[in-house]
Image (cartoon, rainbow, N blue to C red; front, side, top):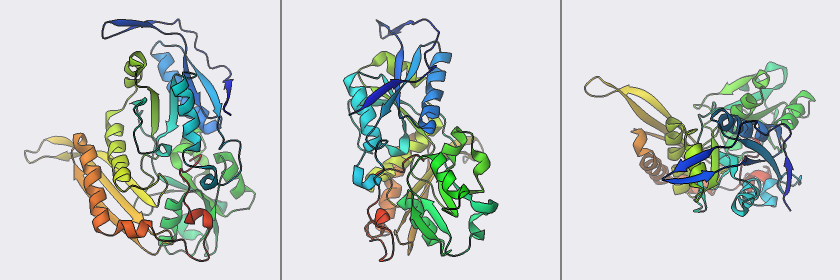
Amino acid sequence: MTVFTQASGSAASHPPEAQEIEGNVTTRGIWRIGTRGSLLALTQSGTVRDALIAAGHEAELVVVKTPGDLSSDPVAKIGVGVFTSALRDELAAGNIDIAVHSYKDLPTAPDARFTIAAIPPREDPRDALVARDGLVLGELPAGSRVGTSAPRRAAQLRALGLGLNIVPLRGNLDTRLRKVAEGELDAVVVARAGLARIDRTDAVTEALEPVQMLPAPAQGALAVECRSDDTALVEALTRLDDAATRSAITAERTLLAVLEAGCTAPIGALAEVVESLDDDGRIVDELSLRACAAAIDGSDVIRASVVGLPQDAAELGRALARELLELGARALLSTAEPENGSSDFANPSPMENSQ
């Protein structure tokens, strides 16, 4: 059962306002923003609350305890979507008005009941190494125990051929960092965005460049979701949307959907809006998308890239996915875990939990 608690100190002091949407006036009370209860989730959702308050709305956080938060079992055992479905259930029931997700945790299939009304500016999407003694990846001795929750990270780490011992990992960011500090692990690999949001980038010993490790599709981005029929709220949230981030996420997520892969399959993707010169020497925006598909045992990695216009983000994602498939991605994605590997990575979890 889902449990609700009001996040302390979250209610705004601003008066409710009437919003006119297509001629219909809707008087709003306090917008309830559903969130998981971890420090990272509260911080992420808090940025949305604060932006709404700054725009003159009333908003507060409502903590939703999901089955995943109450269980220590591997995510693969708990079930697909465990960390997002509880928020969506309460959104559909009207118990909350807004759900804030780590975008990479959402299933790729759309749900007509909901609209992702805003994708705020993305945090740094790179993965980050947190290692003992300030070591960078290339300095870790062969056999070092490196923790990660993601088959994608495990596959790309193995492909580097450093002889690392990849260890399955669950828990919030503080738990993961503590495993390094207490010597249980030599290092962990997590999303740098999560560390930035909780002000712990001091723990990063190396930000892993995409040439070493491509991040998960939509890593570092938030999805701000509401009911599709709540037109007043959709309009208010749309003002928090960042066009460049939406283009990048659209390309990455479309690629993932075409590959028909789970959101933590060993697939990396990164799209960026960059400035370029057209044939007439004018500065224009282009969308650069690169992606990889890896065998879970690290024996092979297929890489490809494409460049186009931001407004063609979905088509770029589809085109690059088709290229990966033509290069043999489907066979790699079905490659079994090596005999001495972890069964947790042989059956990838549905999301890279807690970044």
